[in-house]
Length: 258
Image (cartoon, rainbow, N blue to C red; front, side, top):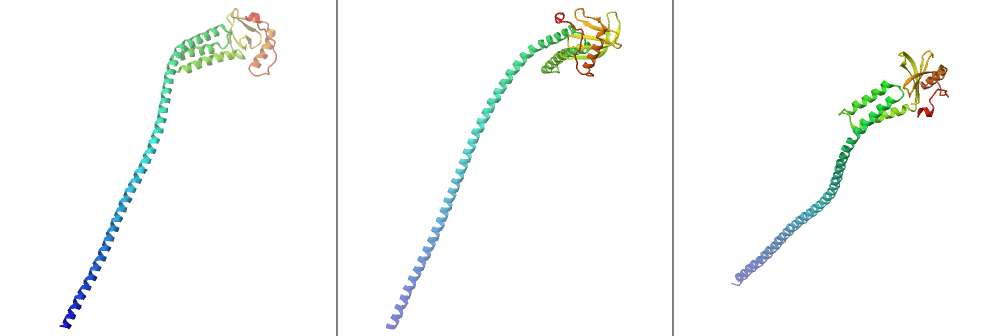
């Protein structure tokens, strides 16, 4: 009995010890498993936090970008407003200018007509040089004035150009060859000498006859042939064939000119 009892107690003790070891092993596994779950949960939580942080950072970046865009749009709007105001002011100026141009056009056409008529009268009253050329210039001006394909500015420029040419005649001398009809109906080929608008002479090619235009009678009158050499020299100077020099010519006195 004692021996069997001892074995029984030993076996029971072994079972108790074995159960305790098993129980301890099960508890460690559970702890480890719980720790792993906590780690997994912590990792998941960190990932969620990271996601929230990332989304928050993205929203902040978007917010800053939108603010910059808004500021840029404000600047753009200010510039566009300034440009629009400037364009509107320009349009207003253009409209005002167009009104002024219309007003000027209504005034400048009669002015140009009077200027052309005055030019024509001046040529008729002047000493008779380059008559065909000067009258043709006046006719061209009248034609241009009626053309719709020529701007007002160009028409006015042409009129002023004609006046400048006429004005230049008063400050130059000229020697040209041409034809003259005398009072007795003769047709002569002569050399003309024009001295500004003061005097106009002609000299026959053989120096046999010297004529001077009389402004009072508006006709040619013969003068002393002793002036032939001086007139011939003046013609050479006018043609730049001789150097300028003092000349003795039969000019009207200031009282006669008046």
